[in-house]
Structure formats: C-alpha cells, structure tokens
Image (cartoon, rainbow, N blue to C red; front, side, top):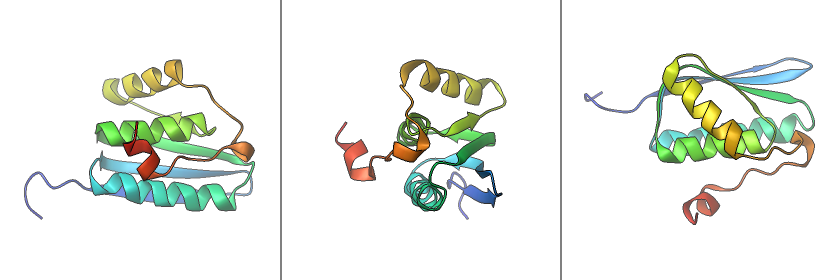
Length: 116
C-alpha cells in the first residue's frame, strides 16, 4: 500500500437491542460509499432498534464522510467520539442537524448527497 492511501476498517457488532458500527482509520474517498453500504444493510435489518456509530478510533474524516455521518445522525444513529477532532465533528453535526426516529429514517443515497 502506498503512502497516503486511505484505509478504513468497519466492524459490525449486532446484539438483540442494538447494532454498532465501529470505524477505525480514515473515512475518506471510496470508503465513504463502503460505509454507506454497511449502514444501509444494518439499517434495513435493525428497523426501529438503536444503531451506534463508534468513531473513537477514527483519525480523519473528509467532507463526504462528514456528510454521511450527518445523514446517519439525522436518521437516528448515535455518534460516539473521542479526541478533539472527532468530538468537534460530532458536536458540529449534533448542533446543525434535526434527528428523526430510526424506524422512519431513510439515508440519502450517495448521488443525492453529491447534489447538495
């Protein structure tokens, strides 16, 4: 892997009450659409149940990644962060987005986000 390549590890943990997507590395480039696919799969199988996005091991988020996290938050996902950068991103999202219950939420597609 060349220096500067973006790497993201997505781990999904499902329990009876909740699902957690744990992100490690850099949420940028092609990995944004990969996370969106994972999110949509979890969302479709966990209707009405709590979904947590664990950002504590994330070290970078690009603009598209921030928009996807905002979409997830708006759809009812909880964002868990550590460190100044991630806490700042989550705070910005939380203060600028209106949340809906997960059961009625629909995540905008990548194409819809590009139009914004």
